[in-house]
Length: 155
Image (cartoon, rainbow, N blue to C red):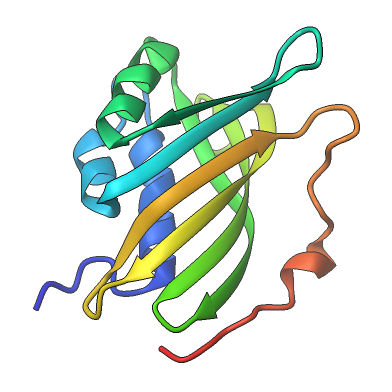
């Protein structure tokens, strides 16, 4: 039996590893291995006039859209806090992150939250959906006490 991504911790670590690295150093093969064939990745932001925007991608579309954004950049996304709720074969992970230029100790670019839906197929976890947003005026990450209450269900 394949032992890859048998824990929620494994797959969330892989999520951040896949998009992080020196220029051209992202691991897109890892991205493909963690995402279910039906996965959706949704990038959000707010336009200059305040309109919320969202772009929804399958895994290949996400990779194609992200490569030009990271071209020539040393970009690292680092998980800073996590809250997980599991019920049977599904889990919802609220994963706070920092994006940094040049490495884990580099310049802070922004902070945000990934909302990750996972599916357990009996052998491993799969990413089914990720949607994220970044901090901005009026939208800040919750404090440490919020992450301390882990919700769990049966394995």
